[in-house]
Length: 473
Image 1 (cartoon, rainbow, N blue to C red):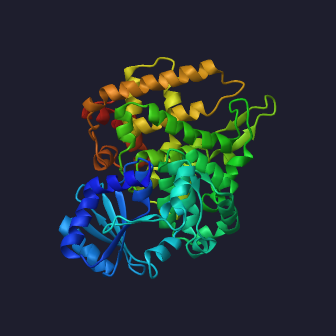
Image 2 (spheres, rainbow, N blue to C red):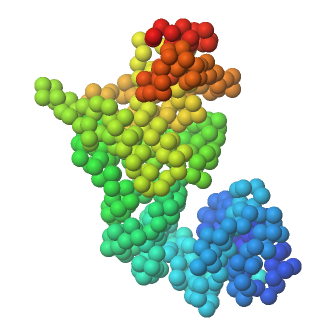
Image 3 (spheres, rainbow, N blue to C red):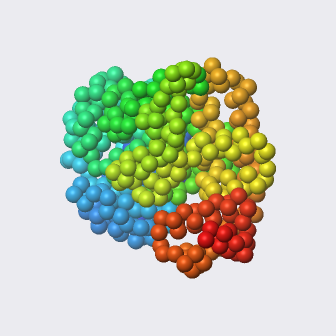
């Protein structure tokens, strides 16, 4: 697409029209520029819901507040020191970021940015395009190139943003840029963990996140952000895995993306939900895919007589490790709980399918146990299987496992709309009264056992629950 077509798309964009109309009516003396992502996305033929604008000859905060009021949008201060503000529109999808001009001109502002492809601007008054760093040519050649090394030293988070954009666009990195990242990778630790979390999850949102992870690792940045990733390199290929554990983890990310792209609209819609962290389930699932085997290095043994590699309870160990990692990284409780749950149960679907006599009761127990993560865990199990083949894992075994997992997924999609929450048959107080006991670890175990029997369908009424608990006296 040429820039003339970009200008035509800008003229037709409803959100940009709202901004332009407001400026004409209330801030006609101001200079307003569209910058960065919206121009890049329109050039590449992508949708865009995040409009970045630079304002000059007007107070940025006042302008943003008045524009927010005019559009009935929510006003958020992102960075008061650098005068950056966010407007979240009523649809909760479209966002406008307003920033004051940095420097004495739009050209000077653009030169202070991270990458050339993000340093293209357009005047909303004149529709003149400003490209002082060659960003348009780099979009044409699908190249990610830096503007100035000092810009990365001033804000090391830009080192990670390089790979976020590679994950999103699939572009190759300029060799000089890679050298800069190699030299400055440790500086990423100076960035606030909240900013790192956001960029990392945006990276996992991209269609090319597996490619970006490999390049991040080669440049020494991955170990600075996720040190646990380097432990995965200790586990070599074995009879069940044709890849070393690090490569298997990367491949799992790639397979999750492929499965998502081939999935039904219903599955895609579920994985596109934003239920925690402000980023999709799919992004969180790919993060889990990369880390699902972090418990293996600590549980690795090799049988002397057979030479088989064992990783007993690696799922449970990895789940507990993830809680520590993501609490330290200041992920929300919902995000941390999701990651820990997915790692803990990532081999559970295959265990369900290995039952001697598969029945609706077994399927329903699995569905009840996994709750809202049924689709997620099945997709993860599929990706794990497709990423782990070896001497003892023939294509026939892989095909059967994938077909069985697909059947389990289809069963869930058929019954999900008819599922009702499990009733609470007995409260903790009622159990204590029945057994004449006090709050204790034993009480917790009884509650857990009762729930497990409910999940399996062995107990369905209060009378049956009372009988079970009374029998423990």
